[in-house]
Length: 253
Image 1 (cartoon, rainbow, N blue to C red):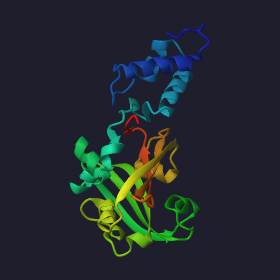
Image 2: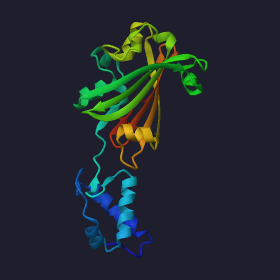
Image 3: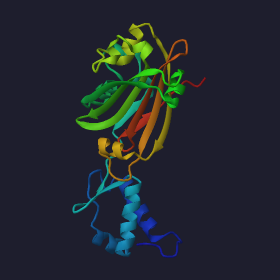
Image 4: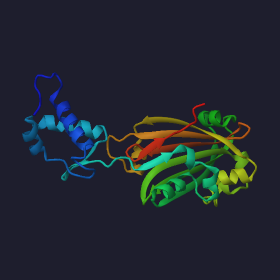
């Protein structure tokens, strides 16, 4: 029952109790929560209070509300993105780009749709790639799927001066992906830098990623640098926050 003397709003107390039960496994992923009427009786609160509590959990990404069916516990993140190994040269030699490497490690089937186009670099792209605004760049726009479901969006931009007449300008870049083609052309990759943030998705991203209301995305901008420090590629990656766990590791220098 709700503690009326605590000073904590009733809907937050209900949400906290449901959240704790979900975390403890009392309500497993995919399970439907008790009905609104049952929650009213359990907590001794009004229907509007229960609805506020459920809406708070929905906005947090803890539950999905399916009209006409009920409220269901949302599955936790299930794709582990380990930054160190996913971009390794060893993975490329096994014909595993970053997403394919994750698929191999975690047992899901990867697929993607790729579109290639050319455009002039805007100020942001020019800044990351250390070129003048208006410089022609090759754009590789990908929609990536895990077991048939869209799992990430990725848009790479590379100076056309280093992609012209290479397989990077084709839909199928061949074994090892675009990074393997760069290294074959003499652009040995020395390092990667990732800039990571979180935000709410755009309407187009919500549609492509089939996101429920209230689910944020993780936005990653990765820059690949040649061994001499010259930027080779910027890649804007959008990940559904409800699907991914991102892990980074580094030596304690």
